[in-house]
Amino acid sequence: MIVIRGATTIPCDTKEEIRKAVSELLEQIESRNSLKRDEVVSLVFSSTSDIHSYYPAKAAREAGFLSCSLFSAQEPDIDGGLPLCIRCMLFVEKNLTPSHVYLRGAKLLRKDLSGKFNIAIDGPAGSGKSTVAKRLAKDYNILYLDTGAMYRACALEVLEKGVDPNDEAAIVDLMRDVKLDVVYENGVQKTMLDGRDVSEEIRKNPVSMASSTVSKHASVRMHLVEKQREIAGRMSCVLDGRDIGTFVLPDADFKFFLTASPDVRARRRYDELKAKGAEVDFGKLREEILCRDEQDMNRAIAPLKQAEDAVLIDTSDMTVDEVVETIKRSMQEKI
Ligand code: DC
Image 1 (tube, rainbow, N blue to C red):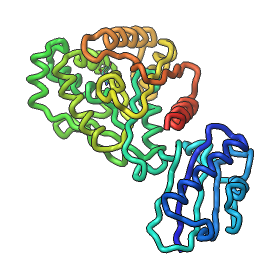
Image 2 (cartoon, rainbow, N blue to C red; image 1 turned 90 degrees about the horizontal axis):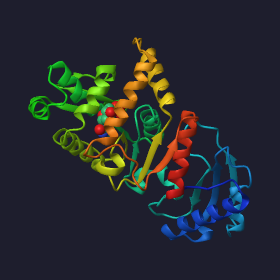
Image 3 (cartoon, rainbow, N blue to C red; image 1 turned 180 degrees about the vertical axis):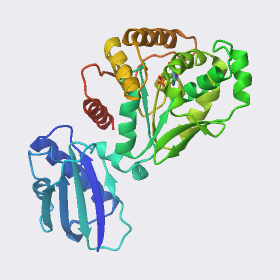
């Protein structure tokens, strides 16, 4: 006896969609495993708690699985779980190496079976990119690459060495002598300068504006973009930044552009810095964010811009959960 696993998703909770998705899933499992119906001893389904309209087992019976025992159960409501998902397990009387089948949005559940993919998230400061990117990385068990942290590390080095952030030649010289690395500890990105963990320091306010300034320079960008492409080429990851969808990975599988009103973005940054015990002036912070937007949008090379094929999400009035959910649904629709 062997067990074959499968999963799929439905676009909305209706009887018709459930029947269509179940029959498609079972057909694929049969054909990829060269199964005959009478070799299936038992078929067990589970569906996420947002599915109420029909029993997947009943849909399987209607799809022609008449002689095996069938069963459906509902899964617990798991935070961050894939929505509208139907999973199945086929117990089969046959000796073969099973080909498990993950269709539609459920492809994301088994990256090992469905191949590598990249998610690009761009947008201005405070639009919610990093919070959302971290959540997606955790839910899909893929890497999160914070590209802004690389520009920030470069800016920190520039500030510490007293170099002018506008002086491209001096920055190139400086960066030649320093080792900028991105490493991961328990899935969390750490930004290292010559082996020193600078992950906290690069979040400080003076570094923000300087990072925008150093990121204008072509030589700085190409140096960092090369590293970003190398990491994204090796593994599935979600990258956030300003130019991921337009320049770093123009062929990214999924692209999103997050935005929010200046007030909301400034408020988020203010709360973030306050929570870390920093002294901040809201008005000044808002000014700085607008100034940074202006500089990031108007630089000559790879400016902050929505890629034509990116999905635009205004996060001003959305919770993090709502943004994550919107992104996941959009990804499912695209698959
Ligand atoms: O996302 P962040 O605030 O950490 O980014 C800091 C600065 O780095 C941002 O103002 C512009 C620059 N940046 C960039 O030019 N390209 C990226 N892909 C990411 C960040």
